[in-house]
Length: 344
Image (cartoon, rainbow, N blue to C red; front, side, top):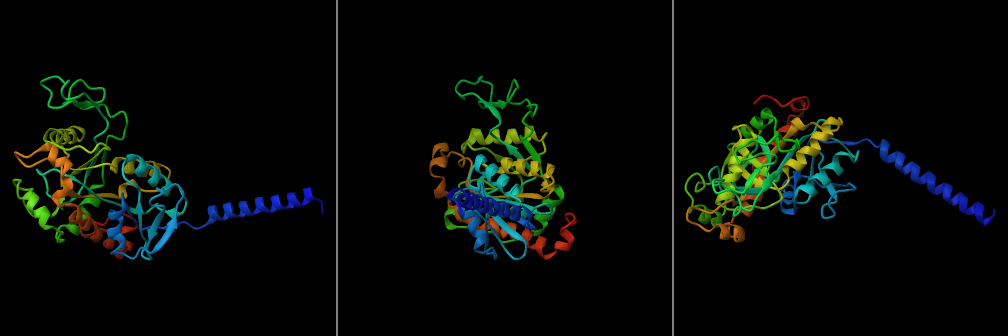
């Protein structure tokens, strides 16, 4: 055999091996998933890893380099950690659903993360199930010092003339309505759970009027997504108004986070491709810090000293306490859940 023939034989063998590997990957049976829990950073995912059997790790190309594996258990529950922010969430969820490694056509999705919370609706540690998911970032903005004096803020909808005018929703990602039946079921299963608290959170909330000065409990109100971490009285008021505007008066803003519109849009597109079901998405956000100070307090200090409020650990713990009843009911009663959300 000549050197050229020898090299050719090696190349042919390599090509055949690559082809076999590729074919094997394409024909491997995707793992059926009953519940996919979506967390955004390490502590959010860690609370599930410490309480549920999720020991099987499956590497998925395209996930965050910080969280390259999906963690799965023998009962059909899996966990993905996307990385924080719109971009990481979209990239990671897209990598997951289009990887071919999982059968997600009948999967329920629990997006479970911490958030800022509006003291008009909840408190530190409160667990809020969302009906509407609203994008905060898709607005026009003027510096508040340069806005007309009769405007309450420098924000207005894109292609509108005033802050009170509803925009035309040209992006088609501005607002999503989650499945009301799934929301009702999640609330019914979690409404009586005992939520975690902390002495620091108790001290911080004591400066607020009700309901913020009450212990945390499970509530239903809506969530606002945007990569700019805002804080303060006037921006909080804009968040309330923006949520009302985009939901035709039905939505009640209470939590602020960075990822959920991006996550839902990927699942919407995956649904159109026959790979997922966006009517099986539940969003749970727990209050880790107030989005504005108590009456008479400092807006600046509320942002810069948010960690001193003491809501972080209760909020992390309460992701599991409020979210797990739904997860457990789905896997325990899969025969009822597989085809549709059972009636409460």
